[in-house]
Length: 476
Image (tube, rainbow, N blue to C red; front, side, top):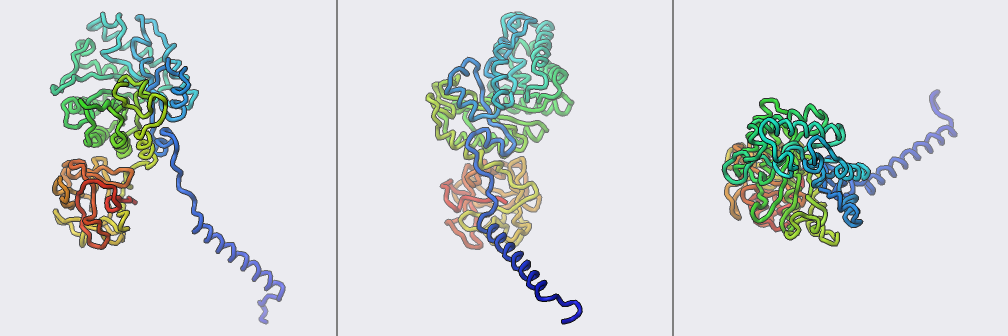
């Protein structure tokens, strides 16, 4: 033994300690392999599922229905945001000039807070549901009455309301793109701006929203008129924080897949967006899921509010437009919404990531790292090269190399999917769904591996959505 050798008992203790450490390490590795930390469990209610992505899923509440135990139970369980259906409107809160009455509004507000929900305020300046005294005013007197009303209501709820619909439904229906000819409009074209400036001074902590209907379709004149107003307000420093899209979809005003484009374009102006009064004729599960996924795909979408609890509570009950049947049972649309919300944000990382085929395990790839317009994309072994890094933008594009877009060369089955210089067309915009499908906004068809192929070099096309594994993609 050398001078630094250990005696036998010390050697045994050292060996025993080493063996114990080794065994513990091996067991730790095995445990890590056998039982990794569980992923975040899917939530079982709409509000909790929405909260996973930092959003709310809310409901419009009628105070006189809160005594209905089925109604109140569903509302308390499922939603994390509340809008008063009528109780905060002008005729309810100031029935006589200068005499405010918040009894009904406070009932809804207090119920919401006691049940742990945030509250949206609806609405401060509107041509409808004005009390008789206000309807009899005009000009400067009406303008001052509007200002006084905003100040009075917002003072009562100062610091307590998350968002206020400051102005509601100020644009005309149809193709004119004009303002609605209301008594408020006749006080001067600046009345909306005055309302927002008054609201900001009254409660600087509340998000201030403009709210309207039939403005979800990007191509409609009413939508464009609203967009131009919001853009003008942002350019001139008028205090507007958000835009609400009522989203009363029916046969006369159907859901269009360009709704996501609308949300994205408004968000790009620097305002938040929200779906504020959602109901859909017949409550089709796929359309409800699409609307939710549209919100999830836009980082500035605050959340979704449905306008009522059960069909029997809806202002359009004959159209059965909500998520719960009259008896309180859940519809298929409820499950579709919950599944979409549990999918979380459908937006891949902003710095890019791979898109992996569920059936093949291979990645969406630009052959030979080509940058040539018209190069058809393919499946290839994932290697994290720049030709496999796709960034999803607020405009709904999937970009590679920073300036090339995933592009549909047509709108029919079999149309090739290629890269092309980004130019903003709908054939370069994609809807990323919680079921893993990637759908072309222009065509409504799915990103598809040709012939259900799984091999390197399998080309990518558009094809009717079938939920096949060759049409499902995992984004990382």
